[in-house]
Image (cartoon, rainbow, N blue to C red):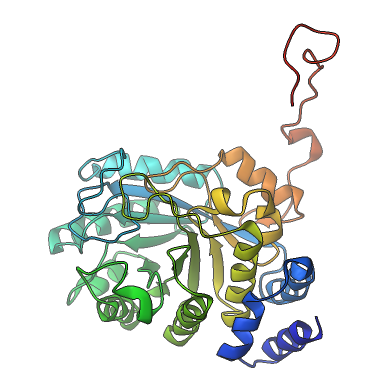
Amino acid sequence: MNDIHHLVDLVLDGGEIAADDAIRVLETPDAEVLDLVAAVARIRRRYFGNRVKLNYLVNLKSGRCPENCNYCSQALGATAPILKYSWLETDEAVEQATLGITGGAARVCLVASGRGPSNREVDRVAGIATRIKEQDPAIEVCACLGLLRDGQAERLAAAGVDAYNHNINTAESFHDQIVQTHTYADRIDTITRAKHAGISPCSGLIVGLGETDKQVVEALIALRELGAESVPVNFLVPFDGTPMAGQWHLTPLHCLKIVALARLVCPTAEIRLAGGRELHLGTLQGLALHLANSIFLGDYLTAEGQAAAADHALIRDNGFVTENNDTPAPLAEQSRSLRIRRRGAGTNTNANA
């Protein structure tokens, strides 16, 4: 593992790792993944200490999207049995955001399906953002509305929107294989518009789409070059009713390698464990927190996440604190219970086996 310690030292000294080195990180033998995590965790600790930012999604408009992204349960032609509804009323949207904030979220993500918003829809989201900021000025608001047009990013910025999410999703060399109704350049254009409006660029990727390790590296280096300040790492949720149904290319250990690489390539960015983390990282989510410094609290756009209480326990039990709470929950507040065995040997109830 001398190579990984050299790479970590390089990054901590302000250097950047090259593509060839990045590939070798993804090729780390499974038996050495714990050493990889321990080494790269030094970078996470340098820039983020033991803090974890909680983010909360509010799905303002679900389903009925005209884009054909093959991975998406909301896309054109998808038959996944998801919730579908038009725009939430402002009061309901603010109420949903408030629930996430009460649960500990430091950032609220306002998301709507579709190719991109109309000016009227931008005004609607701006109004929701303004209401949230009036309630709690310290809360960060991120908008994710698709492709932006002239003047829209500026309107969101004026309403107090702090960040704009538009994931590149994958490498430019693989993009056209997963979506054909818009281009990779379209996505870069929207991220650039947000940056020029003074909004923090939030852009990440989805892994498990069938991309190669080389393309994972290509995507992460592109995000570094874009200056993405938040990098969500999504793991494909292969919904039935989508072209990618049944695709399970990832293992928990490989997911850890990808998160480690994201931290190495984008050392000062907020690396977020996003959609599919429960499915693909599984019991290794705690290890991933030693690399990433941000997670989504609770549910996602069309898929349920693990219970919010489990998210808080995950953070606490791995020695971390949430960004807006500097002390871990005391032992007495932890939801632990001892259950007397009533099954298996000596009973008429099936064993837990």
